[in-house]
Length: 75
Image 1 (cartoon, helix red, strand yellow):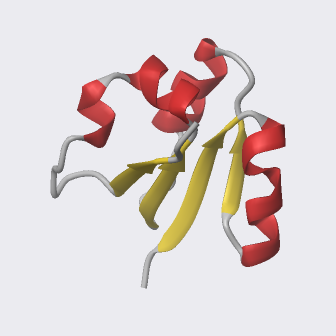
Image 2 (image 1 turned 180 degrees about the vertical axis):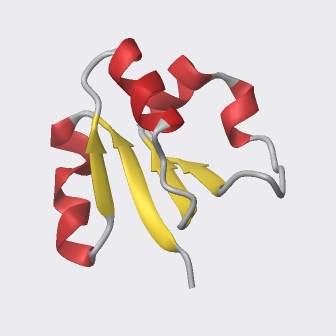
């Protein structure tokens, strides 16, 4: 079973750690890109804040078996 990770601002994703989500705090676009590139291969689902998703572009959320399923939090 894969793990769940979340990428975005601390205020948006921090609480997900209480549910066992691996939280990758990324407060700016460069940090978002670094967090995305460093996702462990064991991550099966990535939760992105809307800002993080905008930074990564459509490629991050398009279905692809070579990468984890990705969802975007509503604003």
